[in-house]
Image 1 (cartoon, rainbow, N blue to C red):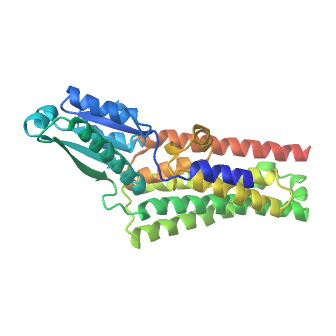
Image 2 (image 1 turned 60 degrees about the vertical axis):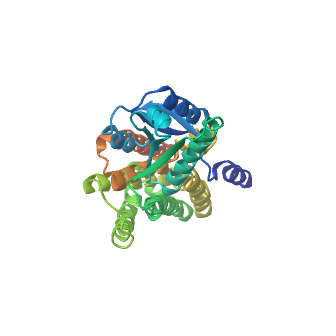
Image 3 (image 1 turned 45 degrees about the horizontal axis):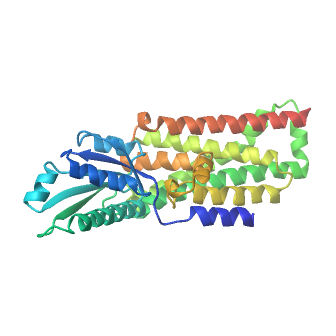
Length: 341
């Protein structure tokens, strides 16, 4: 565990950004704007392989979640730079994560300032590139808009998984689980009976967090409430199925609690994208993050609450959670069948 912790904290915890995907809306399409795009793309901070052709595409590309910023060059950029000695660049960022949005804006400004110094070496009067920043979804950069979805995810994951695993493992320790398993009741019926109360408990927890976020902290709810409820119940089911799986490999409540707390808390906090951007992590950790259910739920809930996303935007993440739930349940039920044999 100390080795796992130091590796996670050492590589994953960083305030820097790397390999952030940005899109470019180049109204000018001249040699100068291309030089700036190449300079930004050449840095390790950004990947500028996305292009858009009109302003109506900006919100749509943000809702998909892959692009974190859009760089907009004004019409006649090079002409304004040569004749008026100044030109404008607009930086539009997805501020659902305010810290990342601020960092992206600062990094782009620094690159543009560096570029300005390069072109002004032999120019007098000096050229100026003015940067205008626009923030989508969270213009006031309220950190609570990030923490409400993150805290909800952590609580649902830990409560659902930990309470379920401990509940089933306690039955093993007391010997009553063996009685249930040799009875006419099927394994899946035993499992459903044990987790059913925690479904309601988790739904109540989710509702309380959302109500507090909305009424106390002003958390917006832009999306459909029924879709939000469906996705929350789906994630709760995923967490519960993971708790069932933990219980199948645990022989004591202490073991189940350790696996739930240490095996889930660190990955949920560090590798879910809740606090630290996943794109800035080393590639192995980015790959590992894909098996963390919390990562996909945070993407879903932020998209619904802040962006008003519909199912046609978050269908991929929804299918991943459904697949994880089925996978965990199938393995758990098979393991219980093996015990019956």
